[in-house]
Image 1 (cartoon, rainbow, N blue to C red):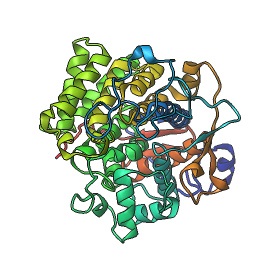
Image 2 (cartoon, rainbow, N blue to C red; image 1 turned 180 degrees about the horizontal axis):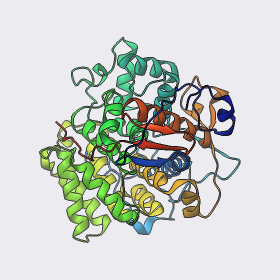
Image 3 (tube, rainbow, N blue to C red; image 1 turned 180 degrees about the vertical axis):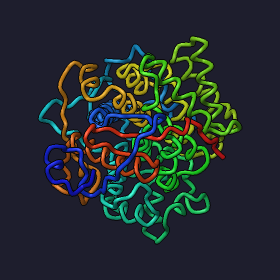
Image 4 (cartoon, rainbow, N blue to C red; image 1 turned 60 degrees about the vertical axis):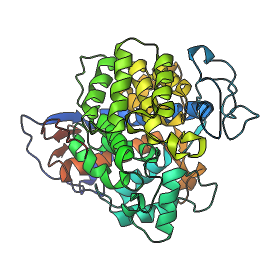
Length: 445
């Protein structure tokens, strides 16, 4: 099993020419995962994340409440789905250019998905991991990648903590200094959620390894609650390969969420937000009422130590990690594993709505795979992706395909299985052997 086997390279498209595949003797306790199936799941991740991202963009910042410098009136409810989109806080006169109504945004075969900030830095990290032949990026590698592939002037599709981190890199700072609260006052913003959840997919069934791989990318922009929230998502993505396949998607996602909850320090507002939303879901309160209660509890009353309103930020910190985490848990729990319903609730729930939708769209898309995503929407969908809509400096003028992007993900996972997990890659059977060390998730600090 070496990368020098040319004949095997031609017959097995899932052989990374940049990796030496080592001999490995499987153990009875190893978890076995099909690499070809995983490639299909990674395709589903990218496809559904794009669907959810662009659907969420229709309602992004349409409804943020009535506190502070900007007031947007009542939140959307389920009866608004299919009705005309209302203006957002930046353009108060027109509806979204992506869709005139509140509906799914889809790209049919032959069309091209555009990159957005919920997909493009994940793409950069995947590119860096593969081209740098590593599983653990250094601060210098991250800095070099950001400066090469992100424009330093607007429009560069960066906001809040991501933009501040880039500014600090330009001055010479290297991650994790770029998220240190002394340097970056935006460290509690949502940005790390958008950029790091994919690391959970590079460490299937090993959240401990996923957290190691994601640690510095998360600390490029986030600390404290924003960091713990980002780790929550990374853990869920990793645990998607540990679920009991006999369970329903509702049971799977709620098991994963409860497991990831252990990472949130019990005295943090992120943990208390999760527990509050879950309690309302279990009480069978309608999701709209839960969302309204979240708004009242955290943005009006500033409960559980969530003090963004007192800080007087623009749009009452409608882009903060905390309020968008609470909103995301609403769409996760009430969506109950249904891809379309989860995206729909996420888009209607309010605030920075493309971020929770993209996160759960990507996770459920991974669990469903390419065919499952297309079946959910009853049609074949575009497989091309234009990273140069938002980023720069990639091959082929920035046009890629989900097939190739999924293959990169398999190769990165190959390396992580060998180098970080001490497992093996069987090229003949096209599967991974992943040593099982239990699913212990260390609590956040």
